[in-house]
Structure formats: structure tokens, C-alpha cells
Length: 509
Image (tube, rainbow, N blue to C red):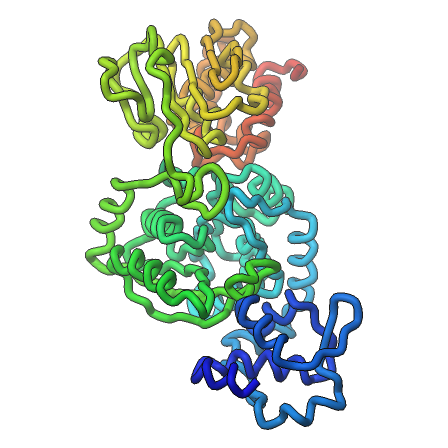
């Protein structure tokens, strides 16, 4: 034991803390000991090999009779104080609700590097935000929110305006289901930040723990900030891998950020035992040189940002797109063989703004791992025909797309032929909204209702149209169809029909 502690030197304090826990008479599982000591699994296992343990199933402890033998080796003082620990007893009801939200929420996805933070961690994030910043009227952007920090903030600071951007449709649906007033936006951050996710005072992110992932998520968070905002970043590395932490901090330094604070081991997780089931919390402040650095970072964007799955850093090679798939296309979107003569546009540009020229046939190359963007890639044009070539066969397409396209799937290729304009009034309004996917959804909807009223020789003011839309779909204000979660777009046909029925005095459906 003395040899192990001596080799650890000044860093032996974490080992001594773990030993203190083992000697306190409680029973421990390996996962709990790793998390409570914020020490990597390998280091804890090395400690366990040096002591005699009493076991009960998968739990263990140092026998109480043996504890006095270790008294001179223990870290009798607790770890550095939690900055918000004194606040936790006042928020037991909020913690109980958060635990329910987490328990009923979607399971982690390995391909997205999900590891769930504990409910206590999520609550402490919300409390720290309120302890460090003035939140009444503030705007917070959660860049990815598998941990449901947005819900914790709304429970503790309901006057805060909170927006979540996430690629996982399940998370967006779960957050909306809670009815706490969090705005949800779909985004694959490799393809851009939603236009409605700008001008925030604060941003919080717990990204994939690769230099590429952290660089991208923090860059997008900075795009969503006001110049004097702050980014709170959760990031952890094993005490055994300081070189990895240095590489990540180098990616942050490239963005010309000031480290205002680092709270060690602030975040605790159910999993991630390789890094001690813990991560530090950084408070980052942009400087006058940050904006240009962010622009340069996203220009050299890499789609491989995760540690696992088809878009892991280790499997970064792109699947080749067969040149024959571009046959008959007037425009190529994404990465295609260089020898093809057609004009082309980046995926990021395709989703950011309408293509200026009119085209009849478009071919889109969808890289591995970006399949979730397919419905938006199809909506982003008014071309008569779109061919999408994926790395693997796609899953079922959402039903609302059938209002715009007749689709066929053959292996990895989706052929989408634009349907003629519908004659039914409600479907015509819906079609106008979906055809204008880069425009503000509520604005297009409003103008379509006003035009319908004019056709029927009635009058509908802008305020009256807004009121109809607000009653049917209060979520619709301020976003485009391209950034709306799929569950919102799937409900849109019925909500549009309700506004048309209210206008015409007919029954929807």
C-alpha cells in the first residue's frame, strides 16, 4: 500500500480519499467508489488489490476490525468544497422531479457518446448558474442536452429563457413533454447552428470528449452567444492521461478563450469509469479574437467527432459515393467525386440558405452518421426530384414528407419526386409551409392563412392569423421547419387543419 501511495506522490490524495471511503463501514460497489472518489477505474482497482476486503455480492468494504491499521494513510479532510453543496437541501423537491425526468427519459446512445450525468449533478449545474450569474430574463442555450440540464434550470430558475439544440429527436420530444417552457431545436452541429439559437447570454455543453467534438460543440456554443456571454463546458479525463487533457485544452486555446474558472470533478456520471465517472466544469469567456477563431474552426469542420460508432475519430474515412449516382442531376450537394462536371454546394450551405438558382434535379450525398439530417436535406429545396445517397439503407421516413414527395427507397438510395400542389385548403397551407423550409414557420403559415381568407372573400388580419396559430401551435413562433423537431413537424398537419377550420368554419379532417 505504501508503495502505491508513494508512487502517486501528491496525487495520492485521491487514493487516500478512496481508502477513507472503504474504511468508513459502508458497503461499496466499484462503480460507486469510482464516482465518489472521482478516480479512474484502473486506479481504484490498483488500490483494491492492496487491501483486504470483505465482500457481500458485488459490494465490498475494509472490515471494520482492519480499519485502524490504515488510519495513518487516510485523507481525513474531505475533497475541495462543492461550491453549491450548501444549497442542495433547499431543493429536495426539484431533485425528486429531476430524478423522475431522468428515469423516464431516453436511454443513452453509444454512437452519440452519451453518458448520463446524475440528477444531483444536473441540479448543481442549475444552482451554480444561479449563484454565479444573474438569471432573471437571461437566455441560456444548451448545446446538446442528454443530461436534461435545461429542465433543471427551468425548475430552479423558471424566469430564465432556455433553448436546447440536439440531434437526438427522443431527447427533444422528452423535454417538450415535460411542459416547462423549454424551446427545442433540432441540429446536427456538424451542419450548423439553428438560426433561432443566437444571441444568448450563457451556453452550457457536455460534448463528446474528443478534441474534435469539444472544439465543434464549444465553437457552436460561441456562435450562439452574445459577445459578453459565457460558455460552461463539462470535460473530464483520467488522471492517467494528462496529454489528452492538454490536447483538449489546446483546442480551447485555439478559440482564444479565457478560463474564468475550473471546478474540479464537479460533474458525476453513471458510467464513464475510465475517467473516474467525473468531469470538471469550465467557465469560458470569449475575447475580441474569439469570433474569427470560431469561423476558422468551423471552416475546417470534420464530421468525425465521437469516440464510437460510424462517426468516431477512428473510423473517419468517408464512404465513397458512386459517380453514377449523380447521373441526370443538375446540382450536387455534399462531397462527390471531383471529376463530376455539375455545380455543387456544401451540406452546411444547403441547410443554411435557399440555393439561388432554380434546379430540376438534385443529388445529395449523405455521409455516414448524418442520416438524421435526411428529412431536412429533402425539405431544403423546391427541385422536382431529389436523389439522396446514404452510407446505409435509411430508416422509415417521417409521414409528413409524403405531403411534399412521393418517395422510393432502393438500398442506400432514396428517390423523392415532388407532388403536385394539393387542392384541399388545409393541405395547401401545410404545403406552403413545408415548401418554404428556410423561412420562419409561423410567418409562412400566417401569410398562407391570410391568402386563403382572401380567396374566400373574407378578411383576416395579421394579428388574427397569429392568434389562430398561437392557439393551435404555441411552439411554432421563431423557428424554421428545418430546425423544428420531427415530433413537431409530425403534429403540424393536424394543427394547420385546425387553423383552417377555425377560419372557414369547417371541421378539420
